[in-house]
Image (cartoon, rainbow, N blue to C red):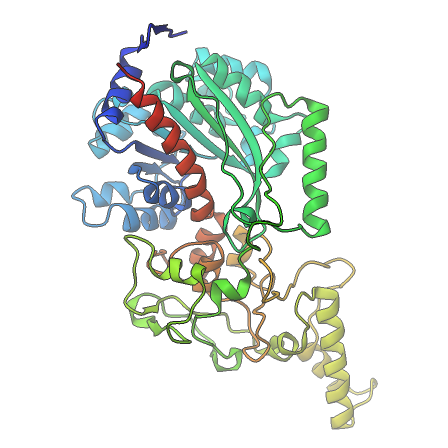
Length: 488
């Protein structure tokens, strides 16, 4: 292991990176499994330089380049989709002009998909520390092994990894704790925590595990951001967290750090209305069948004048992503059957209530038309007005937002089904738009997505909320700045 010599760092590569930061240079970030760039955006705002990204999905990769490398000579190279299992760190650096691989990056961020860990045990994780090409021999979980290969090759001074809570008890073991062990063998001091984004200024109750690591030479013990908002989580979220953290204790969690949840002295969480209430109204009944237009020709002016929430103002005025008085991509799905249901559903209602509402509306209409159950027209009308899903099997399929509360987790499958986030305004009678989903995920209004509605929704749902990433990035930036300042 590299050791300190007095107050100097013995490893010349790590020393060069610290000296560079001490001179006032921005820490350079490479974002693995970047998606469209939620983590990148948060780190950029905190003063990091986004040097490069690797993303397998072509549209997400291009969205990342549009936002972080627009106008660069190497734009097309940055916009290219890459398979991390086939892209060597040295090749990435050569293609993007990043210089020698060991000097190219200061901070490595990202999170391999959870499925990558399913069959990777402690022995395999330790093996990769000595054999960075072990993934070629055993492709099980090779995405995670490739992540570690990038750590070994690029020697970042700091690391951020993100994943779902299930990783705390995936396949019967605490995978994040095993990451801590593996990274320790590679020269890093790592800790992890389970953070909910609603406590950090995001209008969304999203639980995710974050791991932060620093090179041991820096002498930094990883810490996590303090809560900026406080709330009492609903029973479903509180129960899920309790299960995940129970496994931390059962399976071992020496590297776990309890999150700061604040107290009642902090502001209430950012609500759905705070987040999207200033966006132009769209009547669900106004939407016609066909592909939705996207891009600058969909621009709509903001609604409601200058009196907007602090959160909405931030989304309008995010540095580098300021708009010209309106939004683009504020488009919704064509859902003609369900508008009346959306309108009649109470705030916070789920699918069983939606099904009862639809049945009640159908019965009223059937009675008005003089229909009886023996008529073919009765069955036809029922099929037109009542959704077909069994309410006992799909209790959470639909959900109408509460205006005064954060929203539920936005998932990747929102690209195919937006019923999980029905707008709280019954007069509009619709599901949320792409731009509203972006706001709820804390993407600023000037951030650009790639493709049409489905891929844009998917890019949003897959992302780490940029404001959550920003809170973590500020903590890491402070730690790195302090470490660099200690150099003689």
